[in-house]
Length: 357
Image (tube, rainbow, N blue to C red; front, side, top):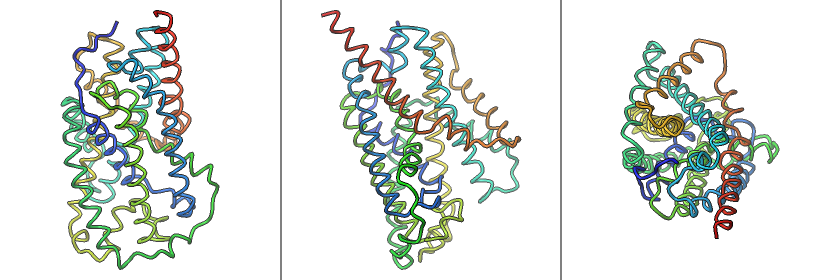
């Protein structure tokens, strides 16, 4: 039996914010669907449909949390059947670590492309993973408190950026793209919401009102996604297809010298969101490892070392981490890990409670 007395607790608002920071990092890092040929109308509808699907997916999570508020999905399965629990845990562990490696590599490449082109990749990776490992060591509580400050700073920056871009904003850009299929757009949008899987493991840390946290997260993600996408398309237009970092490029197209001359502000924001996102998935991976081996020490350090080694491997080989992440952290994986496994677990737990009665 896995003990849960020492589980650190956070409020539902803190969980919402820390997962929202992960989504912000994704929005800042990855080019929106519009660059793949989807027009704004398709992208808008796809984001709404994707959010509805996510709302359905997390229903079993909410129901499971009501029955077992102090257990993660994996710990509950291990308590029922160790073999099945370890198999499920390995799936979550692979998902979390793949996300961490991918995020680490994308952020390193951003730093190399825009700020430190001469810096050795191995050295930069080592510094980044060391910082992330330390933040993961500070725990979920520390990450959630830091996330609030970052979110406030991001909202202020987004408002300033939007106001200063009014002169460059053109609604004609919304209609200048090919009209690709809606199903593909929904699938791609769904695959970019890895934080939903993190919620399956993080809900045990929430004091109360888990449902408010999860559905509030979905609403906040949808609003932010549409605002940022509309801003990128309205300002950059067709050029958003050809830039790797459209969110950062908006500054040079806007009338604000504030962003043109202060790349350091953007760098700080992106760095902090990246560190929080990677540190969160390191911490979740570390907790999973501890569920497998309760007596193990320095689990976050072990996870960080493996992530660092994997990042080095992908850096110095021709393998594409983006394609690998597409397979491991795609829409199907999200549905299975955040929806189907919690659903089966809830049905099993509900059946056990009825039998006891």
